[in-house]
Length: 378
Image 1 (cartoon, rainbow, N blue to C red):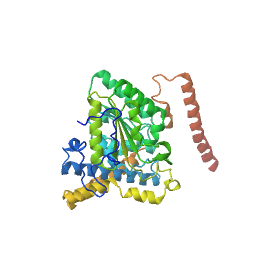
Image 2 (image 1 turned 180 degrees about the horizontal axis):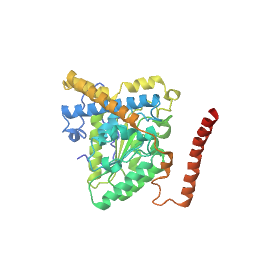
Image 3 (image 1 turned 90 degrees about the vertical axis):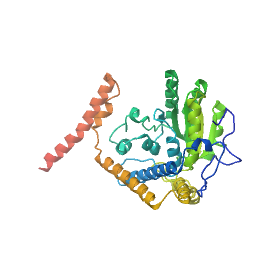
Image 4 (image 1 turned 120 degrees about the vertical axis):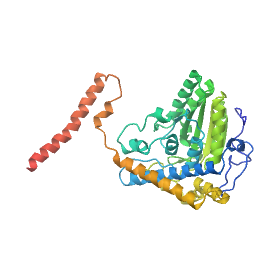
């Protein structure tokens, strides 16, 4: 096991990110990371590649659905597939995920159905799935709030004497939020089995990471007494190794650990965002050359593992899942607006009941207006 103590500089290796697959597809070697992926042979790497292709296909299909008016909003993950797939595949079924709103590839790995993935973004339901069915909480839109949820859950795991862990996913922008810093204080103080997984995708909406972090984000957590790893977030194999290291560290009673996965958001922050207003096309071109799927494909092609037959099968699977996503989206129906008042209290207080009655009267006014218009036209 790689021994990492608070304050240890694991963020760079001679100025480089921890990496096992170069952008040109060359398989690199790292004495600290290699033992953690010794069980990953060609077939396992093909599985990771397929996961990433499927995740991107889910993303492009959902974006198309939003552009066609079938979804209210969608938060694209394109470019971040390796960070999400590599980390999610390192988890056990009993581990629990607390995510932000962009971890749709993680949700896919955890077993969230395509229809459930879209319920919130379609506006047909207030929560997408039952968290206990898949070991993953529903998306958190409040920036950084899920880090506190993860630590609280991890403290509960400690109380129960189990060896599961919690993992909190968040972006670089969330590291400037009080919730995230408070979560690290609690996690360090109680030695909680939680992994903090920061996807540094270079932008907090329109604010570049350099404005909020003058040093690597991975350098922050040692100040809380939490060891960290800074990894190439576009390298699925290195992310898998780093997450296995962090998960084992937390699982074995050593306390929390922090991962900074350096990646890039190739698309907009959400489908309501226009990234051309705040970043140059040359920057986008540079990061496209570091594409996580392409580098894995090059490695597999070079080794002879990715045959034409296998490539066709991967595409067929991604297309089938995209169809499942679209069919599921179009099958969703709007809920009665008054259900927004359900499941808030076991017994609704009088103030909430008054609000419900007022809203019901407001909705009825539209029907009354339609009825009157109909009578007037006769």
